[in-house]
Amino acid sequence: MSDEFLSQEEIDALLGGESEEDKVEETSSSVKPFDFSEVEHIKKGGLPGLDMIFERWIKVFREDVRKISPDIGMVSKDNMYITRFNTFMMKIPLPASFSIFSMKPLKENALLIIDSRLVFTVVSVLFGGPAKPFKVEGREFTKLETKIVNDFVSIMLKTFEEVWESLYPVSIELVSIELNPSLAKIVSPNEKIIVVECSLDINGYEAPFFFVFPQGMFMPIKDIIYSQSPLTEDPVWKENLIGKVLKLKMKLTLELLRKEFKVKDVLSWETGTEIVFDVSKEDELSLYVENQKKFLAKLGKVDKRYAAMITKVINNDRKKEGENGRK
Figure 1 (cartoon, rainbow, N blue to C red):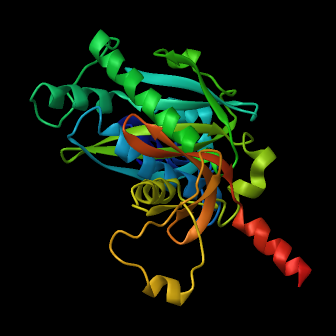
Figure 2: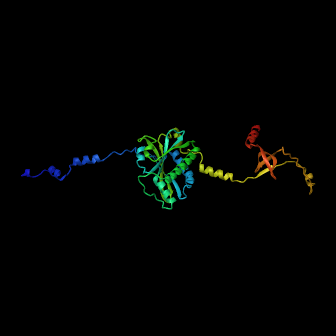
């Protein structure tokens, strides 16, 4: 009688059921190991020098980029991390602009990626549309879009070079602009890169762009990149200060003659008394800036106006050093 009944294994086979061992095998085969080296976020304090360079660059770039469109508002640095080159490039939507540039004397090339969302949003705003990128797939940039890309790249690299000037002077040169990502290989696919994600606010829409550096690019200047305070001066503050200094008004005084008179002689002066100034055009006169004697000059004329031609610059600092040495 028992031979007429099916065993549990036979029932499971007929119903398509799976044994516990099969379930364990299927579960284990569907689990794939995660490579933690694919994305390695830089901890706070990891690259403080590079982080500060970009903070300075944003201030300078923000002023210049508004020349392209007045609708451009805030510029921000959103993230900085280390990842594999191939892993990062796979995530960039096309079309996109890949600008390869050098930073001599640093040896390796870097990459500036202008996302299509940034370009399409600027085009939409320029023609009175909303600050929202239109969806485009399977085509390259038009001539207008290419012009916008070139304008952005030019301003970005120019201002980036200016920020480096006070820290470690580099000569930034644009090597090429590629639309095909396979032609923008600055390192091998598995090499690690430093990615700096930035964004532009265009009427409320944040459009991304990226700086990409080989991880070993900054090794010759690692002391600067890892330093807490690499910059000796703020270029924006310096420019504003110079502008204000150049607009200051100062009093210039040309001393024609210095003579001594007795009090009794001065008391005898009346209306019509002549005081002779024996000054010739060959005499060098003292020219004061505020109350400091700064120049020697000769008296002359330009058209119908008196003028002074500077003949010598007086260095007061050296004079004081000499006096201190004699004491």
